[in-house]
Image (cartoon, rainbow, N blue to C red; front, side):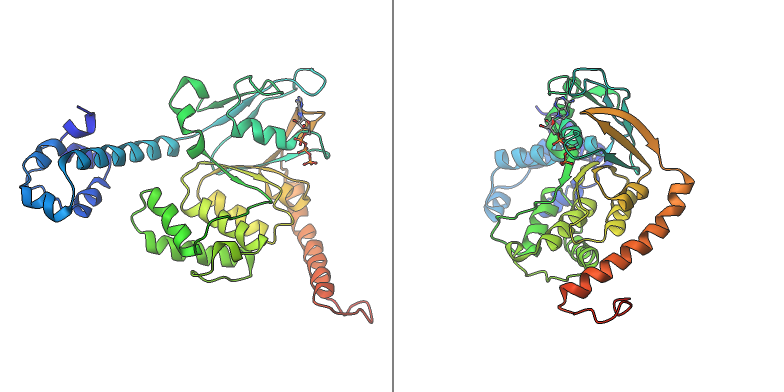
Length: 333
Ligand SMILES: Nc1ncnc2c1ncn2[C@@H]1O[C@H](COP(=O)(O)OP(=O)(O)OP(=O)(O)O)[C@@H](O)[C@H]1O
């Protein structure tokens, strides 16, 4: 018998408080919580199964699935380090450094076009084990992916945010978020939906409604929705971002949001504002990790100066985008 079917409800509830929600959603009100799930179900009268249109085997199966889901969720939440061990650059020379990432920290990947930034993201996405063109190895909590449960959890460990977030689903924003929140066993689904939509609208500055079909969202709106969703609903502790500079979202707010949720954030970018917002950056040269630079205080101070320049550039873009014609310099600001 599976462990969760033979453990007392009292013990299971200590490990997983959400067991109470499972029981109440099936109208099960055990009077004696020292009994296990099997005993509770076996004592139910036939009328219960008729009312619920289910049977004992189905309840056992659903309960096991539910507990497995909770176990997976707890495992992915306990990531406290990600390490990329050096492999080879494009010429086959050993890379100069490893890369260590921890929750609540933003790391940028910088380097010229074609240098290998996306390759590094892909190595992490695949939890490389000396089996990609770079020969890198990714360690999670100091362990190789194939050494633990992590291998099965690849999909739940890592969330990706890319330039191309195309939806093909025929559903509204609200339905999409509800489906996602339910699949993550969230308790307060409706509150979460409201929070994610509010955040996404704040990030893109181009509001949409709960009943907007996801296929109607603009590029900026869909990326904002993904970022808010990854931050609030997704339990993935590692977020990989490929270029959000032209994404039509507020970059600083987006990063603040992810960091507040204690995610490991790794972002390939050419944008100096994003680079200066990060805690550190790994420099890629000829496909290899060349060095890791911590953002220093001079760079942090330079950020505000650069931000003012960026705001000016943004105003200029909007000026022309909205059909204005420049008559004298100074009209824009
Ligand atoms: N260490 C390596 N060994 C072998 N091939 C590599 C290595 N690093 C990168 N490559 C290959 O080099 C090519 C360019 O890399 P990649 O697309 O990651 O560059 P990039 O820096 O993301 O470029 P861009 O800034 O234009 O997006 C890819 O085909 C990638 O697989």
